[in-house]
Image (cartoon, rainbow, N blue to C red; front, side, top):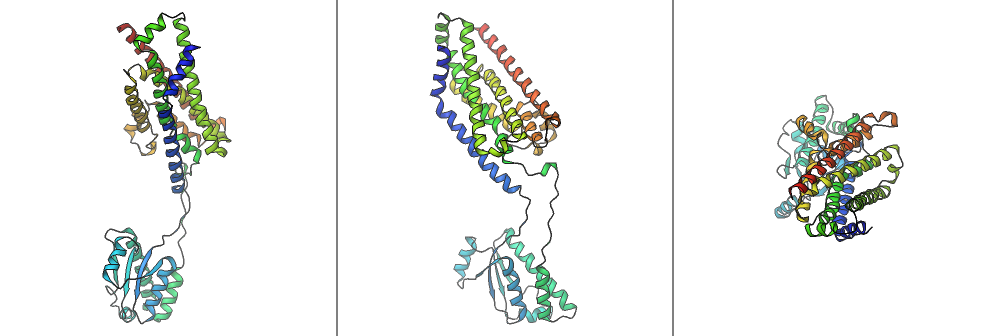
Length: 383
């Protein structure tokens, strides 16, 4: 098994770059999984803002407005010096600054309150517009009660009571907006790292055996050409299984509960089939690499190209119709399609589309392997 051992000695020399991609993959997966799960939570909560308030109103309305703003925001004292105020606004220590003049209640009762409030905001700040909407909503409610004949105190009290009523938010749930488990995001990005690691690992080892001088020496050895290739093939398969098992072990650690489910089993099968496809792609790619530096370029071409066009990094839902039609000629598209469909099935009988994607990925594996054999045959004939 000299060839088999030599295969892994070459792999060991490239361990640093292979481990780097494992770390990169884990980083991407964990960050995206946490971020997407936060976005997918079906809860709604209001925004609390930092508001600088100076209330100089001697009437009742200014106190009521201050009480209303304090109920949902953080009120802060306004610096007396203009420079300190500008610094607080610049460093976003305050989202909005409001000055209530001393005659505000009287002007409001006379209907002359428009423009009497002095509000300062950072230009283009969306938070500041939310504050102004809150203020306008409260004052319009007070104005409605005043026109109905209520006193200022009564109108303010009833307005505070009304504004405490929060709207009920109901999320429309459908298949495309369902909250996805963390296991989905763990398996979503496997095509990228599998393609990179297969092309760099298998490619580097096979390229060494294809070296002109080494190939000539191997032909003169007592070991038959068939036996040499069988050992190289065995090395490729063992390396593929090692990579696959490493990521499955990490899956058991990262998303242990998910892996014990039916969907976790299907995702593991989906990842295994794509590992086989990635091995075929690496066999095809190595035929066009003149050296190991070219392998790095090819790994990025296939890894990034298949990932962006196949829906790994860019969701299939965001792709146009023409882009989706093009993506169907890429194996990673069917891997991602299976990953999405897996989240919708609960039994083997419901997995028709999933099994269809599995079969297409296997067909891509056969196609790339056959194309690699043809390219290798043409390359041998040209020598």
